[in-house]
Image (tube, rainbow, N blue to C red; front, side, top):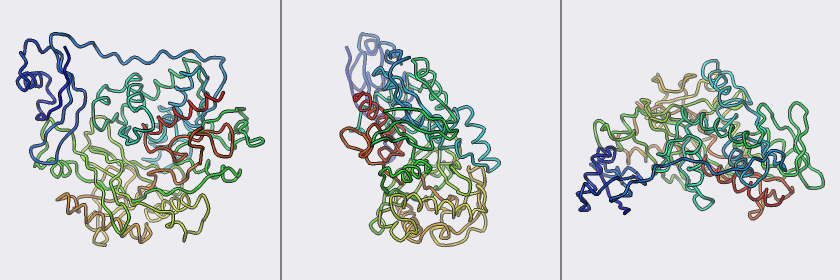
Length: 517
């Protein structure tokens, strides 16, 4: 017999199967000899008050054994020699679109401007140590996309767009921990995700698909309002009547190319701000109401939203036990992002703190039209590069100094490897962003006692929160509104915001694309 229950437990009980079994038996009146197994189905932390509890949803097995969990992948066909779908970009949208094409009997051809996950490591080392930015291989471009080396967070609110569990089960099949099926905010970790992405690529190829790295698209071939193929940087032409465009939110050359070719695109508001780093112990004490985090609790995250003069100011991509990374995609710009290893065991916590931007914010900017938001974003990144010393050193300020408008005489060492330059960050941002951030931090400090501290360091900018461009498509067919056979997908097209939502959008685009073949 199987029975399901929901209850709260102490962290030690939730982390210790033998204790959990005893507690469940006592709580629900079972004979311990009948209780064969307690399987955790869902798990989350409740830190609203002291003591911290763990919310559990469990399946109890009485007088029967639980079947062993098998992370088997679906039985995909071999699509060698089948009709081909061209996919531009090997991020989550592109990879999951390829899997869906195979599932539907079509051969995916993925072209990716960057390198495979292992070769990318050398270019990440170059930007961290030598301050050299490879425009095709960096934290944003290359196999797996931006998420591969910036954390692998899997939480999403886009649950109405598709089956989140389907994506999670596929990831487990490719090697992710089964814990991602259980945790309220699942996370893989930058140290684990590359091997999973590599496994996906081998699987796609073994089933007849093809992946071409170091292949940057420079033009679309369009004839009579229909897609006919692509041209690559080396001058090669790849013919195709169906193209899924999944190039990510940082592919400015793609946005420029589309605009140059007269393809309909539009500006899209996004959010911009800073990345703030605290000692993880400080965040633990604030969130868990303790002096020292207990051994059975994970490093504490936080999520906070406030309104400042009609704008949202909020945390974004919070990384407990994490590291701040340099995510520029071109020379002459500075960009920050954050990531955590699977154990989240670094001594610092970081989070983007960003300000909601609106279309009117770009009206006074030098560039207008569908690329206005993109050029606005780029101008801030270039200003940060100048203020930081024309290198990948990031402009930085102690948090309390930032809020009170004081220049920081010194900056403590942070996890950002290229280094920091002490700058009064009002010189980096327009006044409305600067003031919104300062007021937002003040409000955060009232809610989270100890958060507004000069032990925390603000790094600027956090600017790649989402795409500054939307590529409009028909909501039913998911086809571009002006070009037959072109399917814009994922974050770069403006329809996703993270690994899971991008994967769902890639699969949805592939279903629509293949359904018309």
